[in-house]
Image 1 (tube, rainbow over the protein chains, first blue to last red):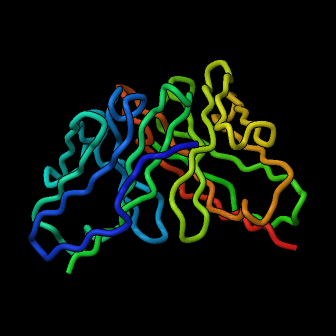
Image 2 (cartoon, rainbow over the protein chains, first blue to last red; image 1 turned 120 degrees about the horizontal axis):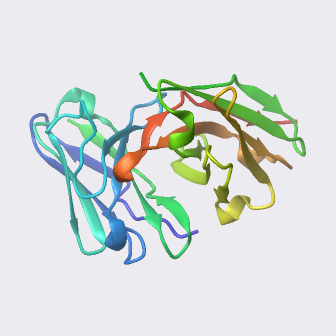
Image 3 (cartoon, chains in turn purple, orange; image 1 turned 180 degrees about the vertical axis):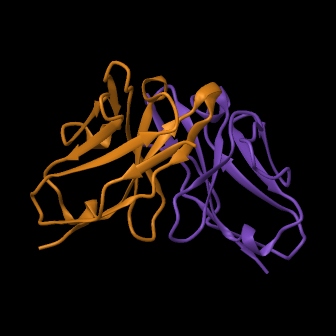
Length: 110
Length: 119
């Protein structure tokens, strides 16, 4: 099944801002937006944001999402060492009748 | 607090089947769907399907149709995922995750179960 497209890696410096992108189509991101998940090595993913920049309780305001057409992006400001992780986007695809994931972006904080 | 606790690691031979569990607590079990997502070693997340604990209805990813079955036991607040005809490519960590309200998909996750398929 077709998934969402994410760049494999992004590197940014400490305290800088990183913007991660996720591209889909009108049946998934363009329809209901994406959810963003953070995964540290050896741990389950954690939900950071869902549908048009809604953050679960306890998630830092440094994480914000936005959507433009069929693409979604996650912006992380004031990068910290603990932000180094894999980031995944996900969306419901109404054409496939399934949830789809991006391949993930490995964020390195230099 | 919401918790999803999964059963322990498994090692299976090719061709075998596996049944893994995910016990929910800290919320009303029948009010939230449960996803199953897997992650092969060094790879990304792959959605397998979802079950509605209220009525037991399921939706499976096309890739797994015919090989996967999801079920629930409301008396123990537990969902199960059964995968048959295992092959080496099924070696992965299998997660259950809750479909939260108001579109907050995957809001809580189990700890994951490593399933190794090897002869």
